[in-house]
Every structure is written in C-alpha cells, then in structure tokens.
Image (cartoon, rainbow, N blue to C red; front, side, top):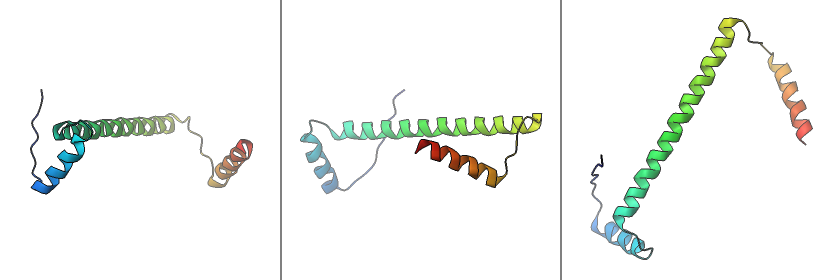
Length: 89
C-alpha cells in the first residue's frame, strides 16, 4: 500500500529545488521518493545489524552459561592482538 507524505517548505526553496531537479530531468516527487526509500533502506540495514549484534551477545551468554567460554586477561588479549598486527605488517 502506498502512502502519501505531505510537508511544507517556503516557495523559494521549492522553486530552487524544482529548478535544480529539472536540470537533471527529475521531479521533486522523484527526489522525495528516492530520499524516503534511501532512509528506509538505511533503517533496514540498521535493524539487521542490531539483530546480528543481539544474536552475537546471546551466543556469548550461551557459551558462558554452558561453561565453554574462555576468559582471557586483558594483557594477554592485547599481546595476542599485537602479535596479529605484526603478522599483517
């Protein structure tokens, strides 16, 4: 189902926007539709990422609860990280 979105801008803003878009063979409706679709895609990506992060956190807690998690001290983790960085260089 399509929705109708209405908003107001001053006449000069509308005139300038239409003038610019006409030079690109586009309409103000086209530009607004494209912007709304782009915003929706960005929100979908954000929601997908949030779901992935939640899934990763749940997996981590499941490992802790099952006793299969391994705790690494900060200094040891940093040493491992530096070792990996050195291999890349």
